[in-house]
View (cartoon, rainbow, N blue to C red):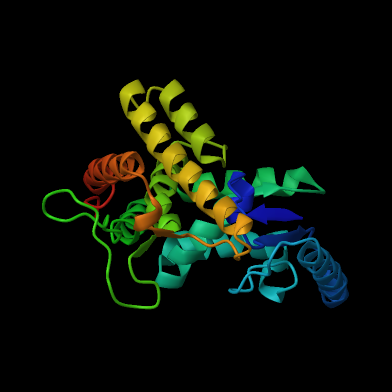
Length: 275
């Protein structure tokens, strides 16, 4: 039973939903149908019980109760190979979920072997194209900052005068994932990835500190926002109302957005021009 996405990274918040899967050993062809039927029943039971204790179901159905995410080991190897070699838009979305994975229960060898397979794929001929497209998708995030450095949000739409803080965290998470994948780091947690990159001399200490501080500041703000919503009897979400922030918090946000722009520039230099 494998945790994926933010759950695999240990970065759950009060608004976290389920992201999980099942990897099971390959069987003889005549037993494959029965094996999947069994593990699908198990996956449904697990996801039902997780929902019962408060983990919301994934709207994208990235759960072990979905046949796509309940597959034998050989099929998972194919998933990873297709993702790296094709780099289609859906593949890039899948990367953000299942390239962060850890064993939550069961046979750890499957996860270890799958990670080894992934690292081998990313050293193959298609790695440059893969990293190029993945970098391009991350660079689409534009910090909501105006010409003079002030935070700007739209006054229209469903949630006026708010910004999605989860969207702001994603570039930092992706930055750590990019370099962790490139340098065969097995860690899944963002801060642990950054520490490993620093310890291996792949990230200078000052850059590590800025990335870690920016990530921590956003996550603390995100959690504080959700706890305040909980206290008000509201369902927790990721939409920050700028009017509720102090001047110091807005100043911290401006600094974080400036840091994100700097690291996006490095990402563009290192990955987005490799094809």
